Structures are given as C-alpha cells and as structure tokens.
Length: 483
Image (cartoon, rainbow, N blue to C red; front, side):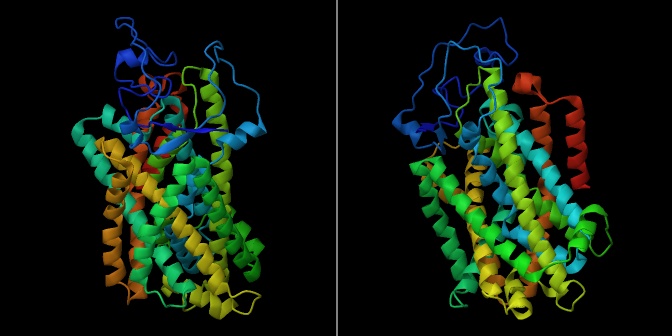
C-alpha cells in the first residue's frame, strides 16, 4: 500500500479521473457515468501530477486501492474482499467521532439523569437516521470525486453559498466549543485540578495541530491514531457500564417503547442535535476522497460505495454502543435523584466517584480518560471539517497551515470566552452545552437539504443518483428533525 498526494480542489490542473465538474459539458464528457453533451469536443489531456504550489493546498493523502487499468471496462463489481475492506476502512471511523464528542456525552448524561432509560429509543433512531444521512454524504463524495461544500459553491447562487457557509460555520463553532471545553474538563480532572479550565482550552487549541502532522506521514497514520482514541473511549465507558450494572430489562424497554414528556423534550432535541452533526455531513463527503477510485468505471465506484457503507455501519454501531453505555450509567445512578438536574460534563466525574468510587480503579479517572479521548478526537475531526467547509465554500487559495489556523481561531476564540465567563458556574456551563446541542439540531436542514438536492440530481450523480423513494424518506427525516 502506498500513499500519494491528492488534490481535492477544483483546479484546472487536477487529474480528470479524480474530479468531474458537472456544470460544464466538457468535463462531463470525461466521465461516462454522467450526462454527456455531443456539442462540445472532448477536453485535452490534463497533467496527472501536482506541482509544488498545488501540494501546499492538499488536505488529504490518497490511499492506493489498486492500480488503475485502462483496458478493463470496469462495469461489474469485483467480489468481496476482506483485504480491500481493510484498505477502505478509516474515513468512517474518523466520521463516527462526531457521534462521540463531548456534546454527545453531555446529551447522554442529561438524558440519562433526567429521563432515565426512556430516551434510549430516540438515541437509537437518531443514530439510524444519522447513518442514512452519512450514507448520502459518502455517496456524493465517492460518485463525484468532490465534497459537499465544493459542489454547493458551484451549483448554487453566491448568496445561497454564503448563507450555507455561515450556517455550517455556526454549527461547527457550536460543536467545537463543546469539544474543546470537554477536553479542558478532562485535563482538569486528570491533573487533579492543577490546570484550570482556560488552561485546558489553550492546550487543546494547539495540540490538535501536533496530531494533524500525522496526516503528513500518510492518512493511515492519522486513522490509526483515531482508532486508538476510539478504543480508549470504548474501554473506559464499557468499564463504567459493567461496573455500575444497569438494569438490562429497563434498557431493552427504553429501546423498544417510545416515551416523551414535556420535561424531556429539550433533552430529546439535544440528543438529535448532538448525534446528527451538520458539520459531519460535509466532513464525510471529503474524507472518502482519501481513497483512489476510478470514477470512469461504474463497477469500481459501486465497489467503493459498498465498502464505505459497511465501514460506516460498523463505525456508527460502535458509537451507538458507547453512547448507550454512558446514558444507561447515568440513568442507573442518578435518575430520580436530587443531583439529576445539576449533572453535566463538569461535575459528572465527581458524582460518579462519590457513588461508584469503591472499584478497582477510580471511576473519576476512567471517566476523565474517556472524556479526553472523545474531546481530542472530535477536536481534530472538527478542525478537518472546518478546513473543508471554509475551503470548499469560499475557494480559498491559501496554504494548509494557514487555513488550519484561520478555521481553528473561529472556534477557539469564542471557546476561550465561554471558558472564562462560565468557569466559576458549573450549572451555567452545562446549560450552555445543552443549548449548543439544540442549536446544532436547528442547523441540520441547512446541511441535509442541499445534500438531498445534489445527491438526487442525475446531472451531478449520473447513474448513482438516489431514487425517488429514498429521497422522500430522507426528506421526511430532515424536516422531522427541524420541526
């Protein structure tokens, strides 16, 4: 397996086998899966290698799946291969981190403590809806060779592009505040309070750049690092789950029997908002660009879609189990107690220690390790998403490090303000986190509606446009979320 740089931008010097610009007939002719125009001559051959100035703008290094073959028509889908599935594995797990960020943990804590097991059905169905939305995102990215923000910029009027960019940036900032604050809380826990919240924010603001350097040595290195963080989360929260021994009967009833009361409605909206992150929809369509797929061959594109769907299902299922662990732990320990309404990320570890502190390992530090892994991984994925969103919508021709600095600053500055203002009030900080989840839920249609429109367009997707039934189902889900 080898790695080579790959340009994700709509440059006129990009390789035609990776990028098709569907608004122009001459580029459509280069991809037989798209509608073609006979009135325009085929484009001249384009260079297939990036020059030095272009490489500065590359955000991902592509993984070679297999050598391209010009002789094979590539109409049939190759048989399933575990080895190929392994090569395609990675983008889905990077995407699934958004299902496990501190905002999700905040929602898990509050839904478990306030509603007990009764919102587990909503967590399950929100996760299923999230999988459906992410399947469309990866479909768009694989079939077109471009990501959602790029295509929105090319297909929509300038005013609409700016509006979508502002809405996606707002959702990203809301998520990033939670991610950085979550990491800062974990650092404060693991340092025994030596490092205050604002210091943890500064550490988290800069350490993500260190981890992003891993991508310079190949995307597989970064994916392996994320796998370690997800494993840390799974181990920590599974330890908590089996240590506290929640009720299996109540857990199954919560998954099967839908319940919703006026008191739990804000928690329910927060659950949907934190599970289906708007920025994650943009991110996933870009992450799949890290695998080289011959877009001229229908069978190869379908093969990539199959493998990416299998990986996304596994990754999101793992994220659901982890969220389930956290929710049931707090449902078992704090539902119906006087502490339920005051629980949040800031004090959850302390309450866990008071109630379950007699085990083999201090549960406070188990919670802190899981929270730190969630915060660090989601912060890095959020930084990636910020680069793709800003670069795609605004077509910024700047170097990667400068783009990272700009997108990072957009989220870090308001996060520092939140950390300083609410540092002395745990209750207010938890309220802010809850309403940030609600804010993200409100932003979902601004990502899902453009995605539905684009992925159902034959002009853009060619043979891979979604059918009417699937489009209606996704549309109803997106408007149900916004209601």
